[in-house]
Image (cartoon, rainbow, N blue to C red):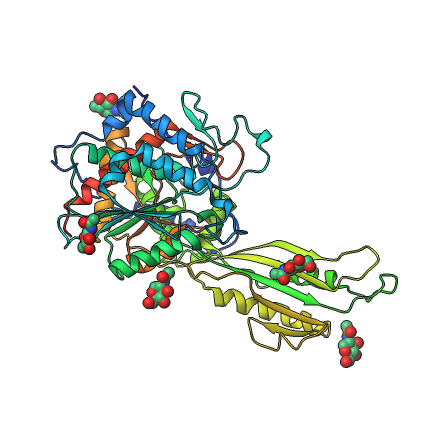
Length: 553
Ligand SMILES: *[C@@H]1O[C@H](CO)[C@@H](O)[C@H](O)[C@H]1NC(C)=O
Ligand SMILES: *[C@@H]1O[C@H](CO)[C@@H](O)[C@H](O)[C@H]1NC(C)=O
Ligand SMILES: *[C@@H]1O[C@H](CO)[C@@H](O)[C@H](O)[C@H]1NC(C)=O
Ligand SMILES: *[C@@H]1O[C@H](CO)[C@@H](O)[C@H](O)[C@H]1NC(C)=O
Ligand SMILES: *[C@@H]1O[C@H](CO)[C@@H](O)[C@H](O)[C@H]1NC(C)=O
């Protein structure tokens, strides 16, 4: 039997956070003077606890069995380990699903068929663009919109296997942690969802609401081949806005603050655009150089991009992060910044974002602010020859109060005077004459397809579907931990395969139901997952499927 869950606080303890004050002279700082008054004001109906949704009386066994019964534990170790052992990596460099590169996915599908025989006999299984997997379990009531569970089958490649404590594709289990690439991103989700359904089928479950599982195979490489095609396939079959909800990996998991637990599904995603800067310029012998070589000019551009007209963070009323912060200020006041409540009442949305970044670290800044990172630079071939072709690529993750055009316009504004100063012709995003340009030409363009910030999924307590997710989550994790559970949405700074699924429903939840500390080293050496945390996730999927199976909103 497993020990009770131990949850790791994300925030500083009350004592520490109280000693932290925010920087800068903002109107929030002024407000702090009167904070006592405001703090004493009633906090009213903000952040009400959602009514719990108890398990339906469907005769199925309790989800707690997954976390309490050792036989489930050893079976999950076996399942997850076997799937981690298949090196199903993806790459941006190979577009053809029929290439040998993707052969491991044949093994993965074989393994899934062996591990989940009931699923493979009851479901309609479709392979989309060779390795995309769509499982359909037709419900008996076609008036209910289908529920969609997502995960991805691929993992990021590994660098040097010798850096790993246990070989990355050995699926080693040490009694608590299951090690290996993909163990926590996100074969645990893949296997968790499949295991929940297999277990339901084993009990003779017959779905009322149609259930669809959709698993891409190149999420780590932008997702076009897998999720891109699966989403198209589902939209062709079911139409727009045809699903009750979609749940995928992601979000900020299950966090503990003091005596409360926060479940934090991602209900939005930042946008993304990569700007490619490319310069063609006269070469020559490096013993008689111009004042600025092409490398110097590209460097100057990046220098200015990093210093001028910087992006400002903003945490305005429409930002999903407010929900969690408001709940913390109300329900966990002793553990968060004492100024949080009055700061949330201020209309200085930038000051609030800056104060939180100062208090909680730069990581939270980029929930509220567009990020910019020059990640690639190329140029020069020889030490005695002036570089003729130089290029650089800058990655932007676009905050939800902005869009990709804001990012492009800013780049044009900053780069135009630099091009002029060097007598370069300049074209930007298809405007200007890029082709005719022989030399001494600067061009900027989108490097890959841009993505706008995702639509925000509803999180109002009055939204029936959100309220039901919240109620199930609360019921499940309160039973498990005996702590009050708050369910709050937030945005993600990265993107998931859900980027292709926006047309299918407003209710998209990027939510790996895993405790903080239960998964380690995603995308790097020694990736691993705590098997008990995996079992809790599995149990949660089991509850979620049941809770929506007959539900009519
Ligand atoms: C599932 O239902 C759809 C109609 O909603 C039907 O077209 C399809 O054939 C059914 N599939 C199976 C396997 O029963
Ligand atoms: C950038 O420059 C490198 C080196 O010259 C070149 O190989 C590469 O193709 C260029 N990238 C693009 C997108 O043009
Ligand atoms: C740009 O061209 C102008 C005239 O065409 C010339 O005066 C100036 O020196 C040039 N500047 C550079 C940086 O080459
Ligand atoms: C929760 O409370 C119940 C009843 O008081 C107790 O039996 C159970 O062990 C507690 N569980 C945890 C995880 O603390
Ligand atoms: C969503 O629908 C729009 C409008 O029909 C379409 O242009 C777009 O391609 C669809 N998006 C995706 C990701 O399929």
